[in-house]
Length: 566
Image 1 (tube, helix red, strand yellow):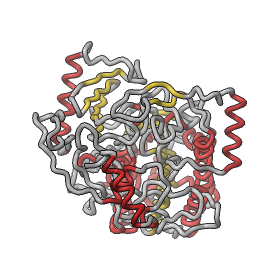
Image 2 (spheres, helix red, strand yellow):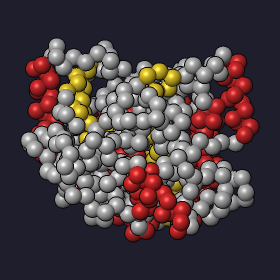
Image 3 (cartoon, one colour):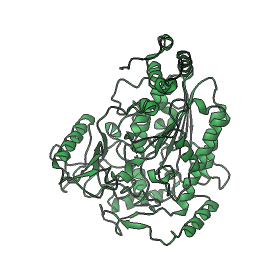
Image 4 (cartoon, one colour):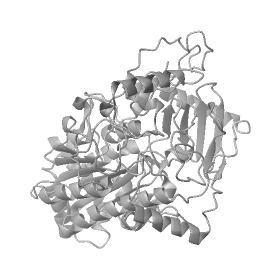
């Protein structure tokens, strides 16, 4: 692992000599900010020694299905109220080009845990997905492989306490759950990607039911606060709080829902004129639409509940005197839900939403606070992505990243502390699936201000300049053929590097596009009934294990009839 030389005063050099290389590299990254032009060598040395003597605590807050336009710090005109997260963003650095590694949840969560692009593990759709259309989707894994080194694995090995609270969705069997992936404690994390209900009883094997009507978001905030209070104060900790919010089902306390109904009436946006047309990728009962205005009272109430929970956790850090030595990172796992399942939010001006490789599906809120290291009130337009979480946290903690596998993310500490952007030429996305939200199978590459999308059914290219056209409405592929060809070459080289998989031909059906020519004819393995029914009946609120055999059979048969699996 290469390390930049430490250009620091002599006193500081003497202090750094006995340090582990990773800690020394972290100290080097933060020194230019900590020292400043007027700071004495002795003060600089003391600051470095203190940082190294006690690595920072780490708090990661992960939202579910929260779009970049759902927070006031990105969208001053949002319908939703998010004062706590807006304050957190002001206290550190806010990224204006933050991305998820995938337009759906499980792959992005894999990237957060491993620092690796999900295509490397064939973890390219949400775990449990099974939808097909003209073609069969790419073969994929439905769990995070056990051989992966997780964020929690590395930190625990370095002496950190590791706490997990909330949504997991990284494997069906218990061996894939947080307590077996490096976390000392696991509260509420299991196979399901959404709560069976936001109100108790929860029917969650890793969360005891509360009083009838208890709201899961408030409950999980309380569980995280308990972890903070019980933590060994002589050791650093990782708190990974993964909100179920704002995934469906759309449920919130009645009083808050009423608050936003009245707000919508007051603003004159309760007239139902909330939708515009969107591309029809696969047949449906009615034309595909996308929400173009935020006005959904239940969704707004859910966002406020999440914001309140985040505020409680951050407030506890203050109350315990931990905030000054804690790196807090907030991110979402994919774009806002705007084209299906109630279409409760709008990502405008960005096109599409969850399940689409357009910006609305992958552009995320992403910001970090680290007092004394990250200057408050700063923004960066450098493109960053969810794979950057692990190398950034490891660098901050002085933990070397795994050296036995490719790590796709970049260490953002130099960017956070002094504005030094990571050295990479491109960001990539690969989604060889038909999304539940109507999105097409597609791949994308961003290079500078330019983004190329390639449709995986036909190979068709689309080229957009995101600085001039963030809504991806003006396709420049025909006007800029050389640029499109160059970016396609870069994308296809990445396919080969990562072992990307592609759509498969149905027996007797047409052949999908493939970067190397003909695609193989697929003979799909039998899909478990639970997985088929989960993919089919996405809007139902149920826990498979509580269903009667006849209901399980009916759901599985319905899934096959709908041809969402074969």
